[in-house]
Amino acid sequence: TFSMVTCNAPVNIAVIKYWGKRDEECILPINSSLSVTLHQDQLKTTTTVACSRSFQEDRIWLNGKEEDINQPRLQSCLREIRRLARKRRSDGEGGVDLAGLSHKVHICSVNNFPTAAGLASSAAGYACLGERPSNEVGVYPVALSGPFSLCSLPLLSPFSFFPVYTLARVMGVEGELSAVARQGSGSACRSMYGGFVQWIMGQREDGKDSVAQQVEPETHWPELRILVLVVSAERKPVGSTSGMQTSVETSSLLKHRSDSVVPARMKEMIDAVHRKDFAAFAELTMKDSNQFHAICLDTYPPIFYLNDVSRHIINLVHHYNQHYREARVAYTFDAGPNAVIYTLQQHVDEFLQVVKHFFPPETNGGQFVKGLPVASTT
Ligand code: DP6
Image 1 (cartoon, helix red, strand yellow):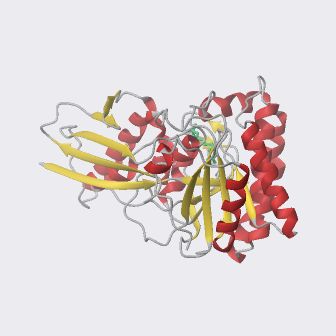
Image 2 (cartoon, helix red, strand yellow; image 1 turned 30 degrees about the vertical axis):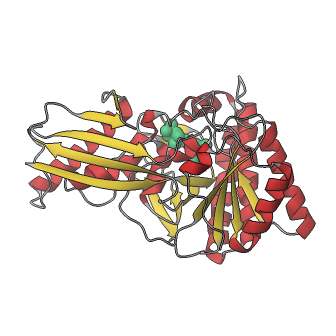
Image 3 (tube, rainbow, N blue to C red; image 1 turned 90 degrees about the horizontal axis):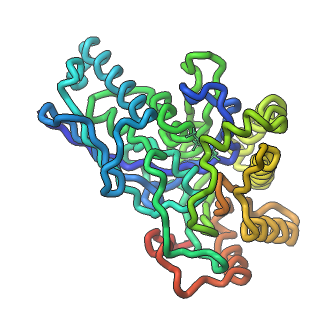
């Protein structure tokens, strides 16, 4: 027998950040987090999984290049999906017979964008989902000028994406898969749903209650927009996995954050999302990004993800909001210098004009932009 499934996985951008694990092996976080899943036409990974008895061994290709299948996180995902497939079969609910390990898989993943620093951590939210409705939050990539190269773009670190959903489909597994995606990369579990998604940290040692849950669907807040300001395409110097590990070991501010800040902030953020209160959403988003980067500085040795251009963007956003005496735009930064801007549709054009005024587009470096559709703003 031979079966093959292809799926797309969208990226998610956290507004309450996940940073720090209480269990490295099971990938269990020290705090809950919340993100928005992006429209999958714009930033996505397409994964095809073929499953056959005639394959000699499991293999994986990422962006056309064969990679090591024995990477521990990938192995955890494969093991878990096979276990679920076996269980489904023994329960008489179908599922491919993998009990004798007679079926091997060939996984082929391609991302439609050369992932730059900082986008990589968000892009780690790769769970490879099925098709989604087309009215999700859009992403508007904008190239900034300055001391950055838009031409030499390193690809996303290969194991930042885990084609869990596609694997599950080809093996006939259904149901709650965010726990499996989590084994690939923590933030990936939030990409199992569209719209506004929380990853509840959970309390149990076995991680059974550490799952992603949709807070509101993608149709809830149709005016919300995301702009990605590409500041640098350099690979980030410290990856999120090792960065957060050092933070857990050395930053007392991180402990304060997880004990005393995030629980209340999660409630406020969920409330702001329910009410579509952009000003509250924006303030919480910016404060949470700032606290995450403060923790990076509090880590020893310190981790610097933001650069001068990132800080200029932060200032620009605050000046812009102050001008209108209300928060119309919010920034958030992951483990890299690129800014992700949240705003409402009616402010997109004007804010882009302001950005272009201060950071005129480069003439020679449009490659990244070409690779991504710059969505129309109407
Ligand atoms: C800054 O999910 O990449 O983007 O679980 O070790 O794979 P691992 O880490 P990862 O961390 C993402 C960190 C972040 C914040 C976020 O997306 O919540």
